[in-house]
Each structure stands twice: as C-alpha cells, then as structure tokens.
Length: 297
Ligand code: ATP
Image 1 (cartoon, rainbow, N blue to C red):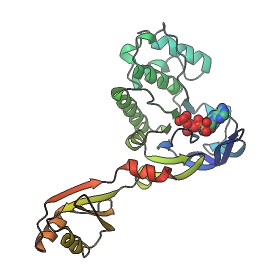
Image 2 (cartoon, rainbow, N blue to C red):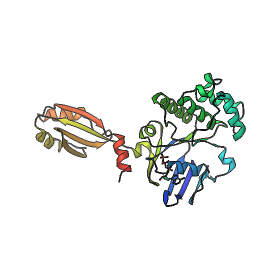
Image 3 (cartoon, helix red, strand yellow):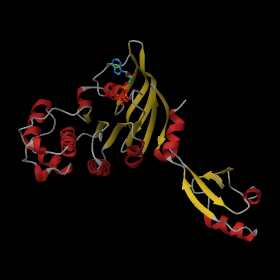
C-alpha cells in the first residue's frame, strides 16, 4: 500500500516554477529520500504534502484519501527546527509541544525520549544540549502521538559526523518499527546510507524514482595493466561480459554491470594467454558520478 501519492503537483512563486508537475508514490514501510540539489523544490514539495503551502495544480492523498485533520495526525513532521525553550528541560519542552499540538499524551513523552536516546538527559536544560541532541529532541517532538509517517527536511543539516550517525541510527530504528520515513536531502551519501527508495528532483522535475539500488545502480570498473597494454587490450576484447574498455594513464579500464567482473577469473585468463598483469584493481563506479550524471544537463 502507498502511504502517499502525488499526482502532477505544480507550484510557482511568481515567475519561478518550483514544481513542474511532480507525480510520486511512496510505499508503506520505506525510507523514502527526495534527493536534489539546492533549489530543486524539495522543501516546496514537503510543504505542500504537509498542508503548509497550497499547490497551484495537481493533488495528493495520504493513505488513499485527500488530506484531512484526522489523516494529519498520522503524520509527524520536521520542516524546520522548532523553537524550544532554552531554560526548560526536554520533558518540559515536550509537555509544551504536546499541549500546543494536541499530539500524543503526557505518558508518550518518556517513550519518545527513549526512542531518540535522550531519556538519560530528559531533565537537563535544552541549552546544555549539543546540536545533535537538539535535533533528536525535535524528532522526538515529531514522534509524539506515534505517527505512521515521519517527514523530515534535511535532518542532518549542520550536524557533525557523530550527530549524523545518531540520526541515521534513529531512522533505521523507526523503519524497523514500521514507520514510513520521508526525507528531503541534498546529500547523496545520506540517502544512500539510510533510504530504501529515492526520487531525484531537478529544478522542479522528478527525473527518476525507484529503489536506491535501481536508481543509483553502479557499475564495476576493473583497472588492469601489463607491460604491453595494446596486446592486453586486444586480448580483453575477446573476453565475454565486458561492456567497454578504455585506456587511461597506462591502465586498461574494463566496465561492466555491478557484480559482473571477476578479477580472479580475468587474472587467470590473462595468465593463460601469456600476459602477466602488473596491476589489478576493482573499483566501484562512484555513486556521486551517477548522481552528477542524473542531475547535470
Ligand atoms: P534548498 O535545499 O536550498 O532548500 P529545495 O530543493 O528545498 O532547496 P525549494 O526551497 O523548494 O528547494 O525552492 C525551489 C525553488 O523555489 C528555488 O528556485 C527557490 O529559490 C524558489 N523559492 C522557494 N521559496 C520561495 C519563495 N517563498 N518565494 C520565491 N521563490 C521561492
């Protein structure tokens, strides 16, 4: 079942077309990354599905129905860092969030603090928290009321590597508990590490979507070298399963689909043909290169 379906959503800010007809379906239980460079329309898209902004055209539905107050309760969100009171503890801040939003119950507060790993520090003042802890408290606030879906805009912005890893672990945990998580991010690495699915946005247009494996499928690159590179190239032209070969910097580079190139087999093939390899290295095509390919003109 899809938790969210978007149908041809359009949005312009005066002459700027921020979304040019975006259609998308987000299956239940996934961690869905909306990946795109700055200005591609991610925040606009999240604002529309959270009913903060109205679309100019198109429609969307949550759990198969148009947005309603009842539906909205099933969705937790973090679009921008909420304003917590610096002199209050995590518990007291969440009590205020609960009172204002009406989400969850007072009894839920300890639960969400445990989930985001802040329970031990629940009585410390917000002002004593690290940036990562502040962000986790913001996620805790979004988790009040046990939403089925959590929507996060750039959840690791400004965090150090430890803070980033903590958010990543938290998202994995939520997913294991069956929460669908929708994340907007401009960081390929973040999406690759936590998401199961990804849609790539470029200047308001969705250019591709699918599982992370499908969309960011990389290929194998094998670098080999021998004293006579030309002879090596001729020999490798007869080897099955290689998509292309090219020479660069005294190396022969073989390309093939992911998992298709077996260095040991190629080594013995060359040896059998009387060629001794002086270099053999398997490299994965960097996902950045693939992302760049998809988003550049
Ligand atoms: P970022 O990661 O930089 O926030 P984004 O992918 O979230 O980028 P949006 O913030 O949705 O992108 O912006 C999409 C486009 O709409 C950009 O060209 C942006 O300049 C423009 N835009 C966004 N908000 C407004 C606004 N309130 N008024 C005018 N233009 C806007």
